Length: 245
Image (tube, rainbow, N blue to C red; front, side, top):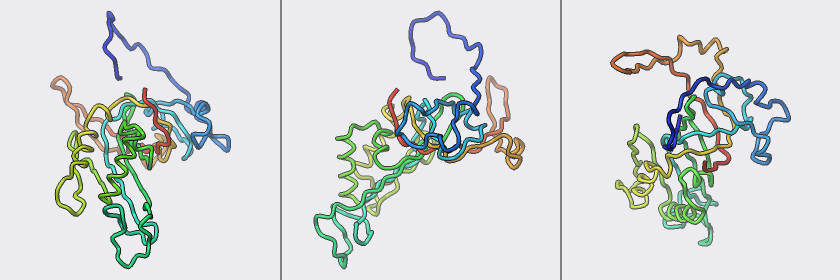
């Protein structure tokens, strides 16, 4: 549960709503699979989505909190030979690409989200990443130009609250990499968002090959008492659109 601090006497959760996932998730040929008809996309909880047999590529809407960025990858390659750009041009000398070739831009990212009922690893591509980072269109274009000048930017999360840049052949962190590291750790990224996603993998409790006894076990300690709990395999979603909450 994520709360804003307002004046109130008390807040008590008396019951959780029970949603029939088979009714709320539209399946079959009429299921929404793109962001063309957002009003038809059902809003779901991650915890319920884990326990459903939703067809892959079905669109869902999730309101959640961005926990951390798992990885971020941006690269410009030559449109002719596929080699990495550097300083805005192809460094492959035999390549016959023109100096006006802007290169082919590729961007991928993955981030962890939590809505209080479950967690999911969300994958996204291209300009959706600008929204994940909380950047305006102008700032996102500036970042893309920096990637074009450098050739490639890559960030990999190596632990909770510890982001580690993968050196890009220079052996040291550039100013833009340092800025992105700070950005990924800031509240500008770790914030509540509304995602429109395609389901790419779910975990069904009816799957006999993934019985509870086969789930990984995690130890929690609360008030001096240790508890053992089974952890569901990761739920994966592909984000097509992100909106602020």
